[in-house]
Image (cartoon, rainbow, N blue to C red; front, side):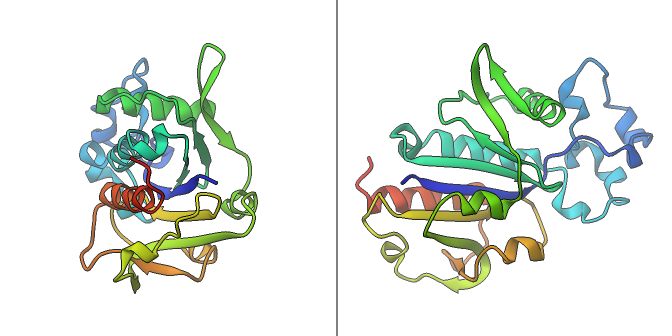
Length: 224
């Protein structure tokens, strides 16, 4: 069974109507430009302090970096990675492993805004990103007898990281990583597993965690 990677509470969303009239929003908003419709802390910081949990939101760059790391890995190229993103507003999307994700950040923002508007991304008949209709617990229940781990600096430190994954590609491992800048997982996320672990003595960026976890899984299963 492939490694199942869930990026949760990701800071990607369309600009909320509550702050749409703010000068920082209007200054950058273009009706014919998808990327300008996506909330971005770098552009809209002065407007975002009116939003609940604003420190978790408006960070599409985190998702971009995480996806580039995951999709470019030997694990994904070998067909042994399942990748999902879960947004702050509880939408869940499955990423097709064959997608050629743009390296350009503005183009990526445009793709994400289009995805959030249409709930899918297609190229001709090929489904690149599709929506999972259900809650995270429904998604997790699809994978039977799974070892579910939530990664956090508040978790128990795994000192011997070769013990994180057994050398058994048929085992189900679900790794949950926060796709937000600051704050902590919501109670609904913490309900998904009692296994809260840390893989470093240091607080790491989400994309570094993604890269490290994938590398450990590759090493455990001789995927080069």
